[in-house]
Length: 308
Image (tube, rainbow, N blue to C red):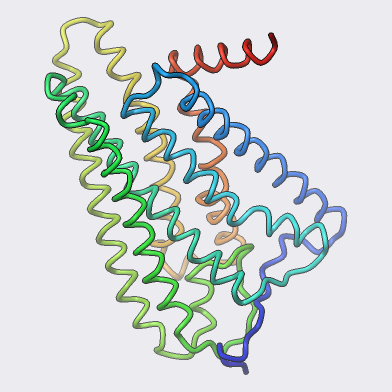
């Protein structure tokens, strides 16, 4: 039996015990991590370098790529290092840092996706007022609010989680420090305080989700009224990447944190954690670049400049 005050490290879940499979896990995660780094870095570079992409939509996309880079870098490198060196240990401060950064980045991403839905709503439903509603100062304020809300949420969760006495050992049943898994190590009934904070976070996340749904109901209603087929196609092309990213993000996070305890098992928890913490940052750049001609043309131009 150990108390949180005497803990100096946690033991993370090992994917596999066999050395060959550990190296396979390392290689697989390395490939995914490099793909996420490359995709998000290219989007950031293209948006920064191409002046005609200095618009609200691409400004928010740049912020999304920064958040994706941060979230995948919080969990994957440590897991790769553990597999490579055949260890499970993470320091107490390292675990707290993982919890803080992951909650911070995922909360900020949820808020940012809501802001991006608002941007699409104004662009399609109120195009004549777009300039006044989505000026550069307003965009910076909205992005800053998204980052700040994530920071405050992370501060609240981290302070609550690590102030709870832990007396069920130090083995975390996940490949990174995840709040639900750390709470399983807490003493009986001491998790109720964190439960209150979790309810507040769920309410905020639900508010974001409802706002996004209502925005898209109005967006699709407006799009279907557009007389020309070309106009409808262009409007749908603007919205579908964002809608796909929102669906992927919300569905994986909801499954991770709201699934019934009866469905919980180490293997299922592991798969779900990979789905919400590893897959979206790697897939988001692909989703946004596939149907975006402006982004693809700018990327092609940048590659050609590098070869000359």
